[in-house]
Image (cartoon, rainbow, N blue to C red; front, top):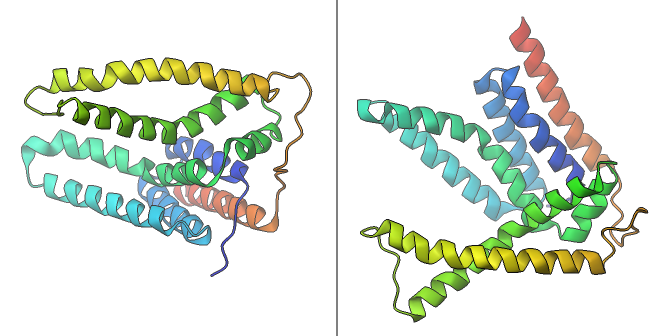
Amino acid sequence: MHKITLNPIVLIIVNILAPSMYIFIGGTYLQYFLFAYASVVLISMGCLKNLGIFYLLYGLMEGLIFISRFIPILENFSLFLAVLIQSIPCFALVTVLIGKYNSAELLSALETMHIPRTLVVAVTITLKYVPTFRREFRYILESMRLRGISFTLKQPVRSFRYFVVPQLFRCAALAEEVTAAGLVKGIDAPMRRSSYYEQKIRFSDSFFLTFFLLGMIGGFIWFKK
């Protein structure tokens, strides 16, 4: 199957609009539509691993919601899961943004939207910090293991402190490194940056964005009847 590469703007627009549409469209329709939409996007882009994790997490949460209906003490927990599960398709699309695009591609795409530069930089750094955080987390766990410190539920506060303190110091150091790298690349320049990754709207981008908008409009009209 031929894999496509969507313009990051399409995924960003979907993740901005989808959560707000729960105000206007019935939750069940929107949840299943976003589930189907995210599945099609992941399959089309060849992100089968992300798709498997997406299905596994979705099925696990649906199972927990079903089981908690028969246990009165878990009623509030099931309500929490029912709200959380609605955002899983958006999380699945965010994993594509984080894993499939580098910082230069995201910057190039966001700059075509003519939004403030500070917001462009903030969104890019936020999206790209997630894999960095995951890598730093592994480093911290490895350091704890070498020092004979184990993460135990018997002492959750103490164990959590061993993780949080070094992570905060690493966040401060990484913030300085990211700022320095951005200044070197001219991220604070007043003119529009040129980029090797020129992001253009192609037919596939228009198709998926139109498909999403038609689904939103159709759901809005259906629930207004």
